[in-house]
Amino acid sequence: MDEGYEALTLMQTGKSQLMPLVLIDRPGGTYWKTWDKQVREHLLRDELISPDDLNLYQITDNTDQAVKIITRFYRNFHSTRFVKDLFVIRLQHAPSDSALKAMNEDFADINTGPPIRRIEPTPEEREDNEHLELPRIAFKFNRRDYGRLRQLVDVLNQV
Image (cartoon, rainbow, N blue to C red; front, side):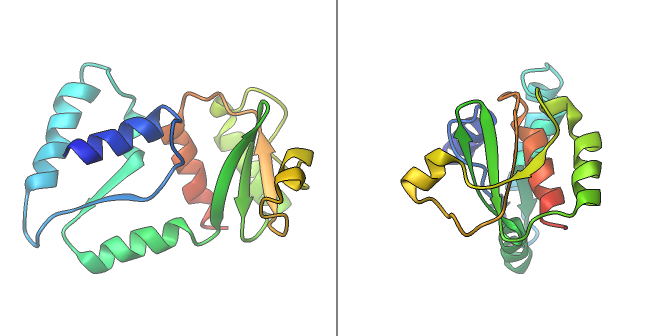
């Protein structure tokens, strides 16, 4: 439980990369479901976390489902990086214009600048030789709503 809270807090505050956090119970077990109920009834109800923060983890009692959750997280998503005030998301495949338009409509609440757009590797990425072959998108992320950012990653994994 301690490790789960730590991983969540680090993702929620942007101090670690987003990752697929899967809490696996034994088949038919209720440990993590009970934990989730406590999170919802106390932290969420008391507004200590955002409803979107619940997107930062998933619970299952099926190891095959856990593997699916993890592999789906990396279906298209590769990694992220802040470059000055620009949030860069590296992908396996670039989203289409229509997908970008939909993302800009659906995720305007986390963008504090121009629309989400495809970009070439930044000079800083070129200097660090960081995954230059990968397509990327970028926008000015508000650095607050990491649960919503996780939802954006899920959308990117569907394109």
